[in-house]
Structure formats: C-alpha cells, structure tokens
Length: 117
Image (cartoon, rainbow, N blue to C red; front, side):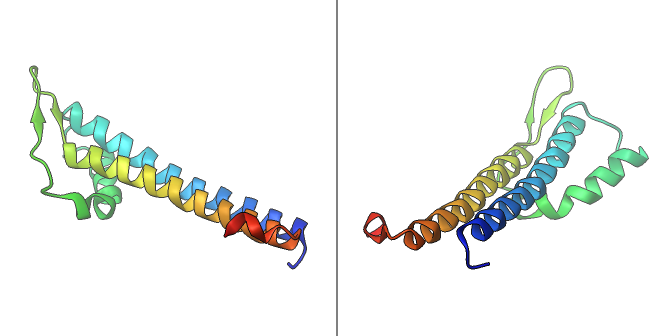
C-alpha cells in the first residue's frame, strides 16, 4: 500500500474500526449508567449481563468517587461517568492520531515535508 489512495483507504478503514469499537464501549457504558441511575434490580438477567460485560471497562475507575445519591433513590455512579468520558476522549485521540499519521505520510509523499518541522 505505497500509493496515496492505498494509505487513504487504510486510514479510513482504521478510523472506522476504532470509532466502532469505542462507540460500542460508550454505548454499553451509557446503558450501565442509566440502569444504575434507575436502581435496576441486580437480579434481572439483562442487568447482570450488562454489569458483567462492562465490569472490565469500569474496573480501572473503581473507588475514584463515591456514588452521588439524589432524592427519590436515584444514584449517579460517578466512576462510571468518568470511565465514559475517558473512553470517549481516548477514542477521539486514537482516531485523531491515525488521521494525522495518514495525513503526515500523504504530505511527505506529495513533497511538503516542511509543514511537519
């Protein structure tokens, strides 16, 4: 894939793949945040499945913040919100990095290396 078109296609493919993976992670984290906020029963099969699915994503953030309790029994798990924001930001950074690498190589290929000094 030495050509500009080949690099462009590879960049598009990689960014699409990364966006899909991070979007899925953000989606399941948002479902968990909503289920926890509404105090969904941990006995329900779907809730257990969702918790098991998202536990590896939440694990690094456990204990960072205490839960924030609202009137009416609603609870905001701030460590889950933090995890959501961190994964959204990481996804952005990875996509931006891939895009910049693709543009960098394309610019060098077209003979404009002075833009990257």
